[in-house]
Amino acid sequence: MRQLFPLVLAALLFVIGCEAPETELIDDTHIAITNVNVLPMTEDTVLTDHMVIFRDGFITELAPAEDLEVREAIRVIDGEGGYVMPGLAEMHAHLPAEDDPEGIVDDVLTLFVARGVTFARGMLGDPSHLALREAVQERERFGPTLQVSSPFLSGNNLDTPDDAREAVQTYAADGYDLLKIGEGLAPDVYDALVDEAQQQGLPYAGHVPDAVGLERAMNAGQQTVDHLDNFIEAMRGPDAPDTYDALFGVTDLIDHVDRERLPGLVELTVETNTGIVPTMLVWDRFFGETDPEAYAEDLPELRYLPREMVSGWEESLTGIRERHTVEEGAAVRDLRHDILRALYEADAPILLGSDAPQMFNVPGFSIHREMQFMQDTIGMTPYDVLRSGTGAIRDFYGEANGFGTVTVGERADLLLLENNPLEDVAHAEDIRGVALRGAWRTGESLEGLLREVEERWARD
Image (cartoon, rainbow, N blue to C red):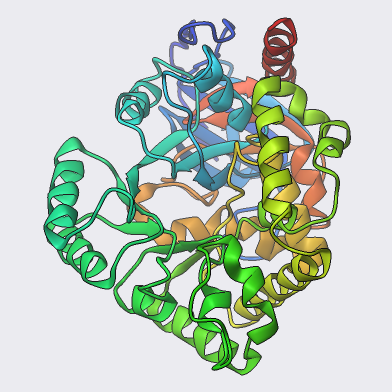
């Protein structure tokens, strides 16, 4: 029987910056979670009655409980028959900037972790995110591990190929993790951006400019296509209008779609290994029928965000809805659902993302609503839904990123759950505790953070 030798345990008082909640963060260097069932997310299985041990932020032991002995010097957490799975990823986060409402940056990061999101890819780039990424990594601020994109690269700020190359060189030198592609780029500007990005070793992801088109973007190596952007545009038939507005102009095309083009687009997605970040719920709201003001009553988690942010969404959604009919909106929603089903059935790389905070999507909470939608509406199995935010992320980025599965050597980003989420993804919300880069927080501690966030915005 293997034995784990005594260590001196350390406790660290972790203080969240600015106006963020100030609470104790347990940061023992050597922790064992015993009496648990493990979802490794390397395959659709449950490892029953196991023990997970991690030290200095990484998983060091994973074995049946009977094969390991834990001495008192190790901090022991009794899993009480619960389930351990990897932390979840949010592949389309909108990180606030430092000049947004005071405290909102730390609140957004806190909301992510409180609902089990331990990795977030920021897709609304701002220079302040570079320092934020490092502060989180160094435990100076509390939040999920961050990957940060550049500010938008769109037709609004890039007119020529030289503009594109200069911007890419600047953002590469600044240290961004990826380039955020926006709307309105001309094909020659996009091509220059891609060429320079490849020379600089920077991935590029996000939207697909209409003039570029989905097939050209995928063949150019765009890392992800977010929001299923440009799939409908790529399916337009010969009688479709020649001009239409970006994004929401798909309602002008919906009566001119050639569905026979979808299999070829799905096949190209698989061939090019283009990651798909669907963000389904936010787009269902854009084209939905629910009164915008009703969301404040229907979604209790909105109490964790500033009221002015929610009011702004109500106003924006009202304006978006005015440009299309109810029937056009329903047709767009139905087609988007069919597109995602086709991608899923072809085993295309689907990566979990919800676009939060955005259009009534509250960080962390929206990931669970997105997963429930993927399971109940799209028909994905619970394992495949969970995998889209765990193992599929690891596969997409490769082993060097060190997260997404419960295996020895991986980063200790873990969720301890009450019940088995492979039976229903709703169980992924029943969080007893979160290990964030090896630092343990109890479910009670996380609920306390949520109460502090709620109280702050209630006062304001």
